[in-house]
Image 1 (tube, one colour):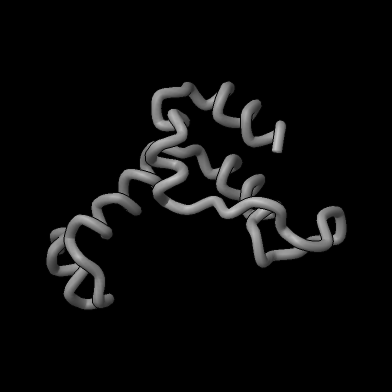
Image 2 (cartoon, helix red, strand yellow):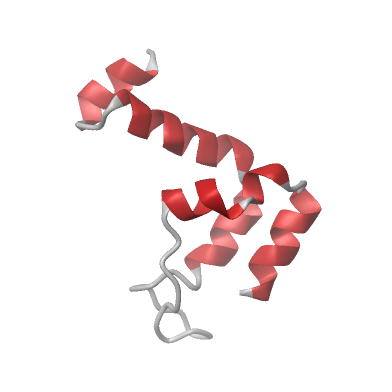
Length: 79
């Protein structure tokens, strides 16, 4: 199934599916777990309410895609 077909099934454009595919392929899973803890609108025991809005666009424009795993994790831990 290609990105256009996936998009059609879930109601997204092919471009949007491609952007999220890039996010999943370029950002290490540990970073996604770390930023989820601070996502605006989410709360955890350590962070009662999220403090930042991590969007797909933020990841795309942040420069994280260009960093190796070690530095992605280091930056995410700074949040």
